[in-house]
Structure formats: C-alpha cells, structure tokens
Image 1 (cartoon, rainbow, N blue to C red):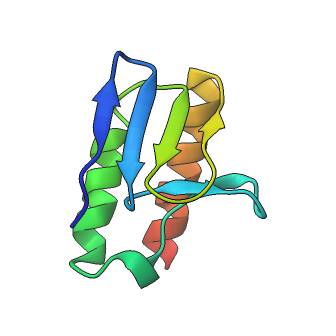
Image 2 (image 1 turned 45 degrees about the horizontal axis):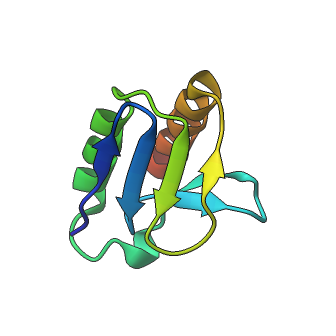
Length: 85
C-alpha cells in the first residue's frame, strides 16, 4: 500500500509507511494507516532495516535526521513495537 525510496545511502522517502513521531520522539508506524496487511508491513519494515540511511522523509509529518546507527536502532525499536501491536 505504500512505496519507499532509498536514495544515495542517506535518505529514505517513506511515504505513509513509516514516519517520525515528534511527540514520542521516535520512528513510528500505525495500523490506522495500514489498510492492506499489517504483517506484510512488518515484513517490509524488516527489509527496510537492512538499509542504512540518516534521513527519514515521510509523505506527511516531520522529517528527521539521525546518525545511521541511531536510525537503525530506532527502526528496530519500531519493528518490535509493531510486532506487539
């Protein structure tokens, strides 16, 4: 249901797939905007976690730049939360 573009090893244009939650100060995804299949989205997020990037540029909301290691940690925490949801 969403397309992401990994560009030049630094940027992830994430559409509605994943975004930065400025209130929680974390990478976030939600069942509320996943109209297709939550388990597939989790699988897709695990695939995205294989890529290194510093910038998360969502289709809506706040963009964020973290170091590549910090971004990888944030993505891993997001995936863990998704699995519990």
